[in-house]
Amino acid sequence: MRRYARTLVAVALATTVAAGTAGWASGSTQRAVSGPPPGSASWRADEVRGRELPDPASATPAHVASFFAGLSPSQQNELVRRHPSVVGNLDGVPLELRYRANSAALKASTDPRYRSLARPGRRILAFDPRGRGLVAEVFGDLRAARHVAVVVPGADIDAGSFDRDSDPYGTPAGMSRSLRDATGPDTAVIAWAGYTTPVGVGWDAATGELAEVGADRLARFTDGLAADGLVVPAVFCHSYGSVVCGLAAHRLHVDDLVVLGSPGMRAGSVPALRTTARVWAAKDPTDWIGDVPNVEFAGMGHGADPADPDFGARRVPARRAVGHTGYFAPGTDSLRTFAAIAEGTAGTVLVDGATGITAPTGQSAGAGAAR
Image (cartoon, rainbow, N blue to C red; front, side):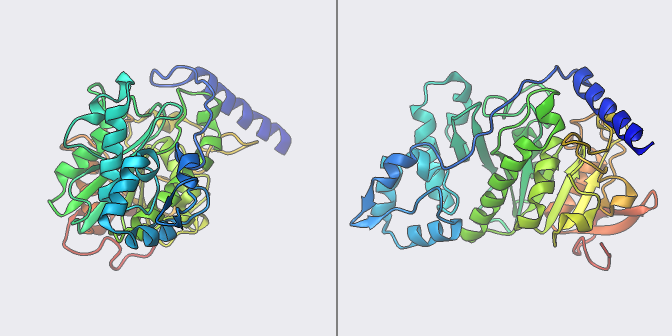
């Protein structure tokens, strides 16, 4: 009987992957971008006044930050000039140098997909043209911010689709702009499309292979923020991005972990995530992700629904959100409460019998609430 039940689960997953939902086409298999930044070979062959440069493949963000702190401004500038692709993508490098390095790399690119990213005034914290392209952008003053949020997107996102007019609240730039607009001037938001996402519905979307590489990259990214002396962030993970965040949870330097439209986090409960962060979940009733089976079998599927009360996450009300990409739309209860979480002013309350949040109350989201 148990073997028969498992077979039914596998068939349900395969049917979901093959058919797709909400207009997704069948997916194509992607090769994850991993390893050190482009240009690392020439970087390793270089030096600064007889000092070896930290190896991008093995140096921790803390070591990178310490190395750059020991350089003079002229030495830092020289490395930006000679190795923009490494400086712009190496976690632990001061963000001001990364902005300048990525601006130079984007201006030198002839790929039309990246033309808008090269516009003056954009704060590009990472730009890696390998594969379909990886990018991270900052909205607000990250160095001066008292509150920081990181937005991790789901499938069908890359450097070319990072910021598009159609479906604006389904892109990392659109979600981040909306969250930044909903918060005060003391908050900065980072749109982090720093991993290879699945394309459409297929094997990549149904498995955790891309998410595992993405989790490593996300963990290193948050280590880099900490090494640069920046504020501990809240991380918002949309759709397949929540699989990335679930696998990375125990390694992330974050205060709050928020998942929305999640197919699962590859964990059966909040304790299974092994994180000290507060965990929140949102799922609106019109989101097609509710039709995806919350199971994990033979490497397919992503497990329990984080929005299920049994998972143990704090609930984020999302009754006014529409569809899979409507959570950050202005005027929604989900955006309003996301802003409260980002600013640390969310109060706890019961929502449909589960722990959720209210409007800003001026106190920590975790005050008086058990996980």
